Length: 179
Ligand SMILES: CC(C)(COP(=O)(O)OP(=O)(O)OC[C@H]1O[C@@H](n2cnc3c(N)ncnc32)[C@H](O)[C@@H]1OP(=O)(O)O)[C@@H](O)C(=O)NCCC(=O)NCCS
Image 1 (spheres, protein in one colour):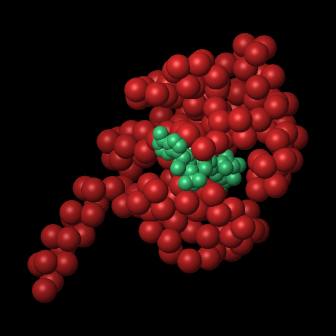
Image 2 (spheres, rainbow, N blue to C red):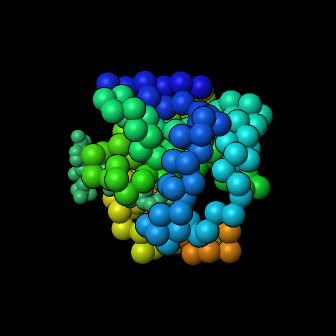
Image 3 (tube, helix red, strand yellow):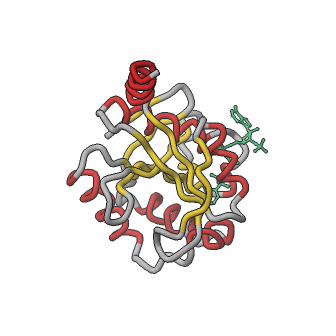
């Protein structure tokens, strides 16, 4: 899995010692712990788990967001299965030193485009109500706010949703046929 834009390269995290340090540093930042909780899994195992998840279902992406100009890994972007479901979710985890450049939105766009091109019909995002910045990313991606849900992880989330263009046009044709 490798996706490229002018500014970013999305590719799997590796076991390179610098990357494992960056990963440990990323998931211990208070701005991430606040919304994601404490990650207890050793970082090497996280890299292995993510590789297995992508190999098991190649529609899934859990990738490092590498900034081309500097080589810095800004964070992680996810396009993966929601727990216990066939629906996909999109997510982003940026290091605070890489916020404010549009990297999360751009990486989100890239994995959504890839997922839709592989036939995924729709994607969801779960955001805790206080996570206003993440909700802004969802809105920038054109996702619709569906309201709150307690369906996942025993936690209350704002639920966002985006339909693929293909799905959208099928819905429009069906609606036109009904009217
Ligand atoms: C949520 C999170 C990804 C948002 O980060 P972010 O940097 O605000 O989001 P983006 O990467 O999309 O960047 C958008 C910002 O960059 C700015 N920006 C600067 N240059 C830009 C450019 N060239 N293109 C686009 N945006 C640019 C935008 O104006 C915007 O700032 P604003 O919201 O103050 O207007 C980040 O805070 C984070 O990782 N938090 C911790 C983990 C987390 O909560 N994850 C979500 C769990 S659901």
